[in-house]
Image 1 (cartoon, one colour):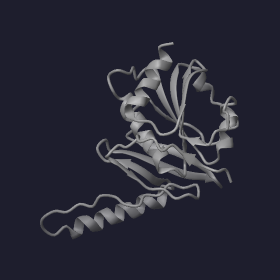
Image 2: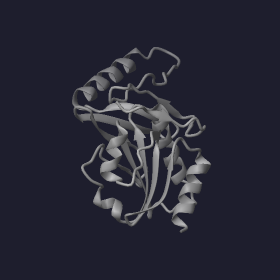
Image 3: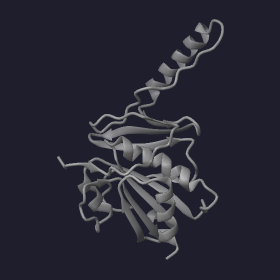
Image 4: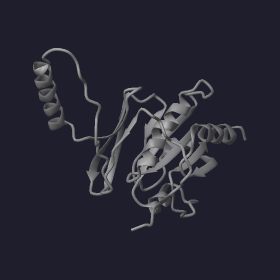
Length: 207
């Protein structure tokens, strides 16, 4: 198993985010906010529980993280042993879930401008960075039509080599890559603040 280390640099700390992970290739929610109110709400609770049970029976996705402020949710589904499929609810249109451990880099990354974030599926700080990156790219400074955010989960650092051959093997996550029409124009690794993410994007695409 690869030795995993993470940057001690502070950042990627959106207060609305509720993290929950387990290390065996799966993201699990530890807690969701409860609701309280006046009067008897037992009928409402029963209806909610029934609806939740029905949804769970048909939806194999696991809620991994949530940004309450934006009603933004991150889900995973184990589509084969050790391989997760990432999806979002209520994510901005510029967000693109990318395949975990692909055989090669996606063709769409060769078109237009991208910020690609490769996050360790076992790392709470890495997953926090997904929400922070979304928040940064939502700002008016960035053209959402031209800049996309690709999000890829990984379990082992060696998976990165298949879609980013120049990867040097350093065990620091997450990995940030800026692509312009298929060419890497900027890279960083480790947990970044909002300001550092914004600087990476501006500096990379100003070249």
